[in-house]
Amino acid sequence: MAEIRVERLHKDFNGFVAVQNSNFVIEDRSFFVMLGPSGCGKTTTLRMIAGLELPTDGRILLDGKDVTFKRASERDIAFVFQLFALYPHMNVRRNIAFPLVSMGMKRAEVRAKVEEAARILRITELLDRPVSGLSGGDRQRVALGRAIVRRPKAFMMDEPLGALDSELRDVMCGELRGLHDRLKATTVYVTHDQTEAMALGDRIAVMSHGVIEQLGTPREIYDRPTSVFVADFIGSPPMNLLTFNDSLEAGRSSVRVGQAEISIPAPREAMAARELILGVRPEHVRLNDGARLRGEVFGTEYLGTTQIVTVTTAHGMVKARLASSLKVSIGDRVGLEFRPDRISLFDAGSGRAIRTALDDQAQALERAHV
Ligand code: ATP
Image (tube, rainbow, N blue to C red; front, side, top):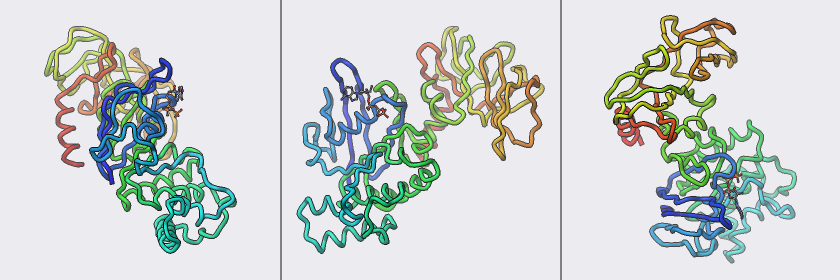
């Protein structure tokens, strides 16, 4: 098992910065997810941790030992990729056994370890089948078997479920988390899919343009995004973002958005008048005829127990997740009310969150919870 420490990690491809001054610690036995849009540097970071790519600068420590310039084979790390790189001419048993056979392990020991891995993955009945006829999910289980069979220090997984259809992806997501809970091996997992990241990760690093925008538990990232990028990237639909101009005094309990005075969590610092952004998730928006922030219903999307109602306002579009029993029609004039303790504030210039008293409380609670 392993703690992975990344210090000032930097990767430059002929002048193009793919990873910029990255610093984080992946705790032993934890499931760490790197999440972000295509090209943000997730795979490059993973490949540097694994020893498949040399950093331009910075260090990587595995259990306190500097492995920055060590070869992949010397790091005791196993991979699972999106494309199930199985040997098509071998059956399932021989595919899983391959890393052990390559190490020169005795036949009886190989057999025992392969059968144990197959039991964990519930593919014992497939052991003597050729891999060519297997379904996508089973092929991925075999690839996982090959990774877990030698009980490495850590697993690196690069979009391992990316090639599966969405239904199977949900099933495999649950299986992967279950597998991690049983094996407790440090896992670094790359994905661009936020649902996967939220379901799997103990902690998530949200990346953009080679930089970690926010590192936190799924709850921290969802409830308290530290930047407009994270607020907009996480959540489906994402956080509503309303732009307005105001000044902030430390401890103030409301902001003026057009005609409306909206209650907010008290900001930690004062700010001269500037462009600000108010963020609120759709589930924390209510319709209220008496509210001063008004708009017109632009669309409704029926989702079974809930519906997403889109309202246009002078400050931007607002999506509300409401009970589907509520009667709302396109063209209705409505008032909007936000749950004050679930509001985030951002400085529009920097895109960074303005800290509030609630951030400190939420963080303390989250730490106690973990
Ligand atoms: P994706 O999900 O699309 O793989 P990613 O977040 O994993 O995206 P990376 O593969 O790490 O992103 O790539 C980060 C950036 O570095 C991209 O713009 C990519 O084009 C660039 N890059 C990656 N590898 C190389 C390379 N060998 N040479 C030049 N540029 C590269």
